[in-house]
Image 1 (cartoon, each protein chain N blue to C red):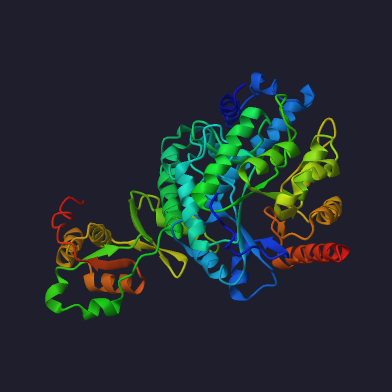
Image 2: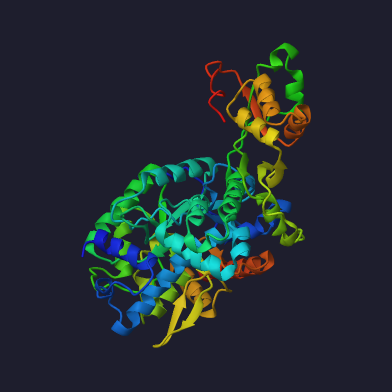
Length: 287
Length: 268
């Protein structure tokens, strides 16, 4: 993997996901956000006011670029044209961190499904995903943080549990882990597991960034399904799990995501402030 | 099952309507009575994500046919024309053509052209910047060279002609727009859309102005551009159109390439 030690890193503070409705507010005046994260695919257009806004804001805030389209889990390998687009974007923006998901979104026929779809955790998938991560890190010239997904179903074909699968990916590719605490909680709830057991089995030394967000609860014939919709405040059990996580990992950059029913910016900043308090408490606990 | 086959089956299950593939459901580890509901979460996510892109790009089409009809139409489009790249700002480029051949909406013959107008607005919003030709730059050109200047049109400018009043229909669906009842539906219209300071602008074109833009885009020498405009519309005020477009940053700096002498002759 190319050397990325000379690059800046994200501040160990709480940042927010920058979404289109808040661009004018950020352009009008500096906002109390320690760092920003954007979805890379929202800024691939060759021009226009959104790209211009991000290029301006990038000078004032540390930036993380979070990919939602590379499809690390695609059986047919990565889309070379998309790698090229991302490479050009990252070379221009020089983000402090880049990340992708342990999921797939491009089908073998090239159809892009615009969602983070689940993988069976098999030996075959492990080999494929590891090769895809290595290729992405090589082509992008940067280390990737790979995010644990929220899932709603499981496959019978399984050789690994999710935490072991991620640990093995980290070991084989030297990628980092983007630990999404809300996803951890949602997946555990949807599959009847204990998120703390999964947490303890994850490769925590590799955590380069943490995500938190809100989720929805949907009633079904057999009970509740939790949907990772990023459309509400972070739930209390997720805050508690964040505290537990930070105790294990030590302070790490934390990001608050909010993607549907996006609130006024102060609501989002207040969530980030609470995450900042969790970070300071975890630093104090370590002495 | 190999991962490639699993993903191909999931692709179909998530995009296509109707019951889920039983062979796919049989691969899930969840309780049998929960499998369809769990898979449906992903189907909803996929549809919602792609539908939201179309909804944002075609707000006037949505108003013209109503939210319910738009949803049903968009879902058929998504099934038949899912995106082929993870670049969603470009998703929907063939929605207008789809609408044009979609029989249930054949009684709204202007719908496809209104969709073309909305897509042109979308393209203008995301188009690359290029150096605009300013009034000062043109004023500095030696008079004897003016007629030979090959001025271009910026990528942030689009123009289209329709046998229908697409601009009036569009305007009637903007906040505070005039009522649709005042629109003469038998009026042909041509429209120019351009970006200025990050804002998408739109105005009607006369036949002469339309011919001018087409000739500019073909990089014809300025003298020929003027001729082509006057041929389409003897009443055209060429200087006024040129001055307005220079002020609006519609045009691109001239190129010096003399290897293009006939490029303009093939243009309409």
